Every structure is written in C-alpha cells, then in structure tokens.
Amino acid sequence: MDQLKTGKFISEKRKEQNLTQAQLAEKLGITDRAVSKWECGRSLPDASIMLELCDILKITVNDLLCGEAISMNNYNEKLENNLLDMVKQKEEADKRLLTMEIVIGLTSSLFFFAMIAVGIIFMKLEKPLWAFFLPVGLGLIQFIVCMAFALRIEQVAGYYVCGKCGHKYVPTYRSVNLAMHMGRTRYMKCPECGKRSWQKKVLNKD
View 1 (cartoon, rainbow, N blue to C red):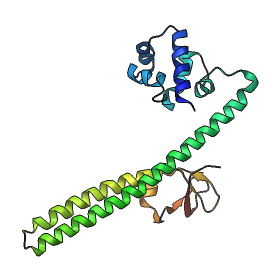
View 2 (view 1 turned 60 degrees about the vertical axis):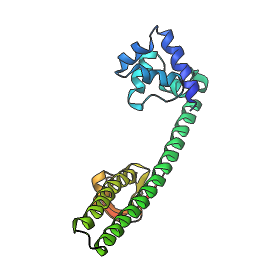
View 3 (view 1 turned 135 degrees about the vertical axis):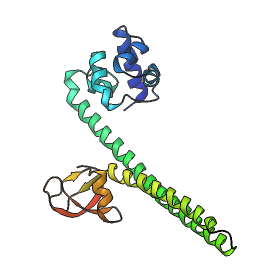
C-alpha cells in the first residue's frame, strides 16, 4: 500500500465532498491532525474507522487501499492484491514484534541478574540488609513488567496451530499465560476441536 498515494486520494475525495480536514475529523470523532497525517502520507486510517471514512468519502475500502477509484473490470484483481499486501504487512509486523520479544526477554534478564550481583556485592561490603534487597527488588519488578509485556507480544503476534485439528488461531492472554511451554510451543486447548495439544507458533494463517 502506497501511503502517499492513499493520502492524496483521501485529500481529493474530501475536497469533492466539500469538507475541510476539521469537518472530516469531527465526523469521524478524531483530530484534524490525524487527517492531516493521512493526507501527507505519514500514516494510514485505523481499520476501525475505515468503513465510516469510505462512507463519508463515497468510496469503497478497496479504492481507499489502492489510493484510486477502481473500475469493475479489475476490481477483483486489485482486491486480491490488496489482501495479499495486508497479509504480508502483518507477517512482517509480527516478525518485528517477535524479535522485540527476544530483545526484551534478554535485556530484562540481564538487568535482573546484574541487580542480584549488585546486591551480593553490597552484602560482601557489609552494607545494611536493605542494600541487598533494594537492587534485587528493582530488578525483579522490571523483570515481571517486561515479561508481562513480552507475553502480550507472544499472544498477539502470529498464530498458534492446534496439534490435533490444525486450526490456527490467536489465543487469549490468560491461555498463553497459564499454558505449559517449551520456547514458543505451548500446551493449550483448541477453541475449534476442544482438545489439548502442544501448539506451535506460526506467522501466517495459510
């Protein structure tokens, strides 16, 4: 998806409807700064307001994604290409998220161990007992917060594949949090077949 092209298209269609950026923003319940960012190609409309935006601009979602009015002759082809592009973008975003998860896990673990080492050093220097527990406590707090964030990434990035029926889905945060796991493979209940199995993490749903 070409953000600049889509932005110019939104601007053209907004002007055709005799709307200012502020008026369009008011109709959508957002700020005119957000509309300005779309039209400058710095961001794209959120999926939650795309349908409403298209209704106001008198265009289809496919037109919006293409950045131009699509004729019926090549409508299906353009739609298929847009869907493929969106799938690719999601896969790339999920890859970045999972890489970030590894970085968060490693850095938070290193910081935790470093704080433990600091606490031990203070103990050897015969400092008060709180001098040991303070750095260890800080390290533990940041470790718990970072692990919760990493677990959230683990939940939303990509899909899990049921080992019984092959169903691919995004589990709940609670399911991921409570499941036994080996790396990114987790023992969970499939919402499709209702059976428990070891389920692998994959990036695509095909």
